[in-house]
Length: 135
Image (cartoon, rainbow, N blue to C red):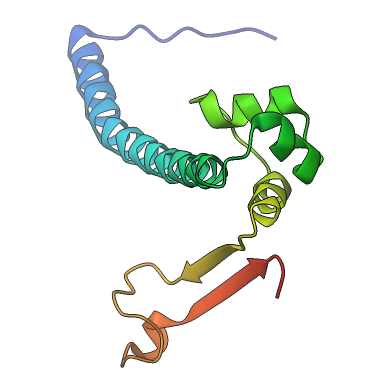
């Protein structure tokens, strides 16, 4: 099998470089947008963890006591409360919330929904709630 190499002219090289820059520019915006969304999701997670820690402290519970109530090892709870790169499971968050006498709830809403369900939001405001905890 023989391979044929095509010789690129300087005009074709300029054209391909311009195309590459155009693609890079378009992809850059998309990558940045996905990065911002991931960052926002992580910030919401950190906020939830901060709320759990605040509630634990409000109740006067030590990490040792919280570990006993949750069944989660003390070092793992410490990492959960103090790490900025933690990604706990839903089960972990639910167990921690339940140990503090709280319920962990997730509400799913359609993107672009601006009103609460039942307040004239129409079909775009449908909300589904997943609740884990004591009823």
